[in-house]
Image 1: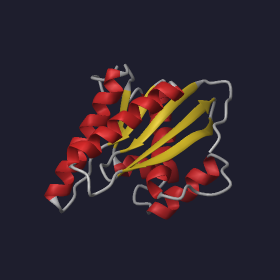
Image 2: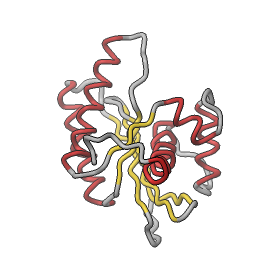
Image 3: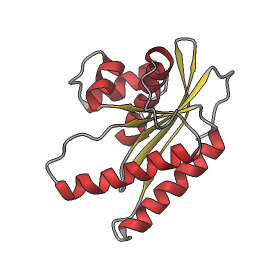
Length: 175
């Protein structure tokens, strides 16, 4: 996928945390317009050790930050999961991602799942398809990303960027 360049007002890196799949998306906010720059999903193999998987996630994040020079990162906050083992691993991967952003000096906006849905669709209980459709519409994309992790990351970039810019809702550790 080729990257697009525009005059930048605010560049946001959206991160949908995981260790099997991590969604990343970069969006520029110019005035009230959100412009798609880039997206990707980092996928790691279940055959690898957990440490190797989060190393890949960290290394890819560092490269994305270097390549796109975002002004702020928007990371999905954890939500309750019934599988405690999976929740702990996602939490650890999220911690590695937060640390990578903090090491790069990025302010961090943490967005709860219901805030994300409300911010992108206007409905706090929207489903994945509704989020995806609004991302395509707002970013004027030809089609949705292949994986919903990328759509979620782009939605996080949009919502987190507006939260950062208009509401000052930023984790004090990242500012």
